[in-house]
Image 1 (cartoon, rainbow, N blue to C red):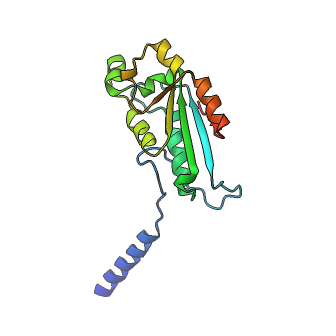
Image 2 (image 1 turned 60 degrees about the vertical axis):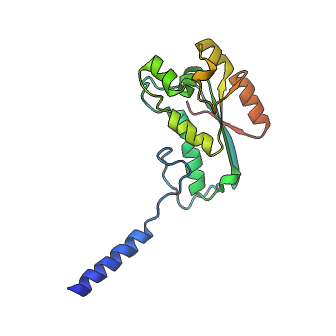
Image 3 (image 1 turned 45 degrees about the horizontal axis):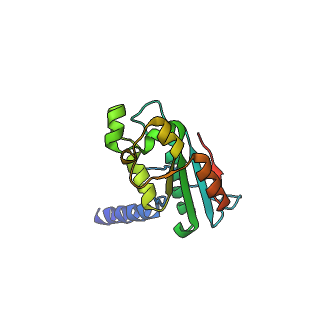
Length: 175
């Protein structure tokens, strides 16, 4: 009986050690499925700017466009692309402008904390440049102290997108 229990324990330990979990750069966000044996090879360097201009009707829901940036980072890290070879920027404008507000500014308008604030901070902390359109800020009447302090304000989303694309960033629009 002891030998059987030891054998079962050893088999359990072997089975759990073979379970591979996906590598992630952004915990708790950006879910993805690893893809084995791809026939289209993943590049070793990637540089993308995400153009996000829509937001959810439910003000307590995470913006899917912002979450896509976390997915992009996580799946490329898992696929073996080195962190130093991944560059990402996020340009936010239009209806998504509300998603860069501080919790207190968001709460004043929508009676809840900003569901995107934590994810945006995590993205910023790993080097994603986050830019909000100055036209969106002005037309919507956001004060600078209502914007998350790590978010850059550009003259316009167009200005930021042109500048980043001229630096070799590839434009991604999933809205």
